[in-house]
Length: 148
Image (cartoon, rainbow, N blue to C red):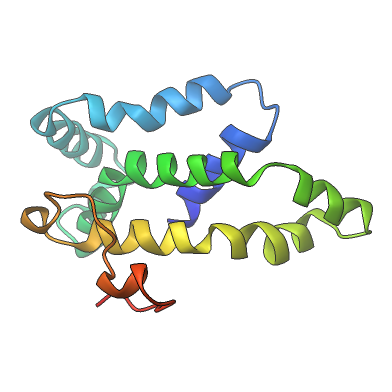
């Protein structure tokens, strides 16, 4: 999830030359059928010599499951960063804050609710994700931070 936030930040906030290609790569897992992605992961882990020892471990399952949510999480965070605007980060840097301090004390607290929501949403079973509602039923009435 941290890597997805970094990808969203790079796509929205930087002038990196490969932003378009990075955005395309984020959408790629959603455009390919699941069987193609599964065979691609299998081929990757069996065909690469230094990845072969971790084949069949729980780490691979966690990695592949998290890569399956790259599109959803990155798009939610991109939308949040676009709505946030760059003025708050500029105000922080004008006030003498470093980039790291701005990220930790301005940007991350403002995108944290979207981050938590996407984590809760992705961890739910597919049959419960038919209607796109907040994963916390009390989120509409209170400021609860739990995901149950």
